[in-house]
Length: 334
Image 1 (cartoon, rainbow, N blue to C red):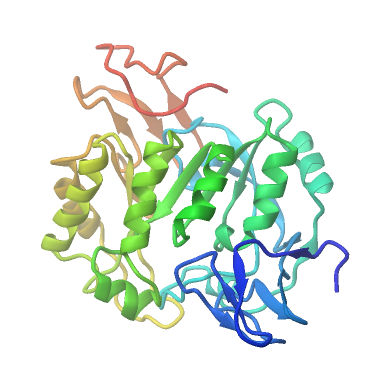
Image 2: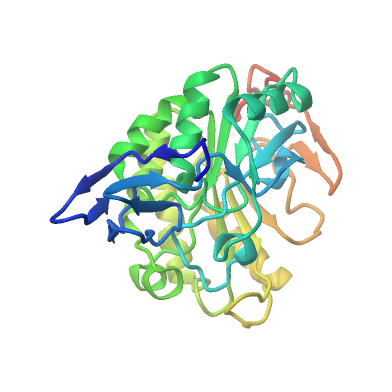
């Protein structure tokens, strides 16, 4: 057992040596010697341990747009890492090799991770927990954020977490991108092994907490691309705020799903539906001119022009359109 292992938070004892994890809505009941669905928490001799603590798949420096974040420090780079675990079982998972199966990891203490931040991001000091499901790394993220509050932390997550642990974590988080995978309970149950309602609740809580928020929808032909469902999803986002950026990304066949890849015209249609209610809608995973650019919702001028390799941002730290003065959602300090 690693010396960096930590007892898990949010669980309770049941009869005998059974434990019930209370981190996410699965509420896994875990016998001795077994793990929960996410493979990150194990019942060892009647205590629940975060066995993935400080065990990282690797670490790299990415453009922040890759996360994707288009309105949070655009044009900057961010140190990125993730755990070898996930609490959903999406049949089309684009990273299934590292989210659904055991993969080699490296041990990375909190101090070593902070040294990496200083080395790669000495000025911006920002860090993304990403690639798989960072919320299954709950204790590691919370401990790092508490020890190094000067680092701006971004999470790229499925949002499948219980309200109490989310509320404890949010004061330490600068930005979140939530992968809103579809907009029916049936879809989440059959395709992801999860539930939609907790994620809707959490999206609202994240926005109300003042954390920078962007959303991503992977558009899968025949599964979550019906106009009625898209309209309901867009109406939900708009009911919280039409300023929340939405990324509509193209799916490619992988893992357990062999449906045809999303076409350019599918993304274009979904964007047009979303732009009727939302201010900022982008197309992802397709190299199409204009899908990644940000237009001012009022005057229509291009404020952020993106290519595969660069971002030209005209919005300053005052968050205003330089052409008409409209407030543009996001954080533009560097």
